[in-house]
Image (cartoon, helix red, strand yellow):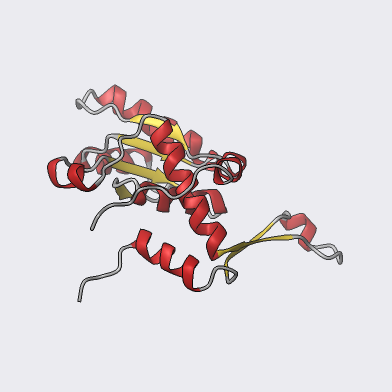
Length: 181
């Protein structure tokens, strides 16, 4: 049997259970938890989740990331990306969007030392570093250390699309062309 790849799995979940809840994210802080008031949540259905992934893939491609369609996947190597993500919805969407664009994704732990992270990125030949706002300082420190070492590797640093950008783009993007088959 051939495995179901992540983009196809998300499309299937959106088709089979469009109104099912894919994620439930808190819209409150830890301080709010101490209160007795009712706290707001954002519920993301499978349909919305899949549309947000398409929006993220389009946003990455509009920012100059090459789209690796069927022909490119056989003729070119994927872009190697290190991704420093947190737990919010936008980070999760960014990960799946990068996969849908045909990138090779490395998820290093930002808890490692800068030296360990740099060694890992050099060993893997990472070309781009993407980060959530929480890990911007880590990503920039890694980029600075790479520049100091002069190892011939100067990855582009960029933030993930914000939740607002994803929500706005979702309304107009349509389906991202994922053509691995």
